[in-house]
Image (cartoon, rainbow, N blue to C red; front, side, top):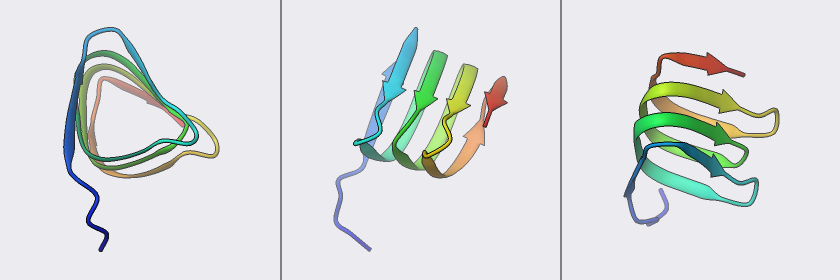
Length: 68
């Protein structure tokens, strides 16, 4: 397993994880998140999750609405 630092991202509107971005940790907040890159960890939002076609997600997901 890599030694990538864990992170927590809190947001309240729209957040985009771009195609060249890798996030390991937790995404928590209100609003919308669009994943185009890679996320590993926990996603817990009161809002919409949009996982784009080439995105890679390995996470526990708790959201109001999700599209893949």
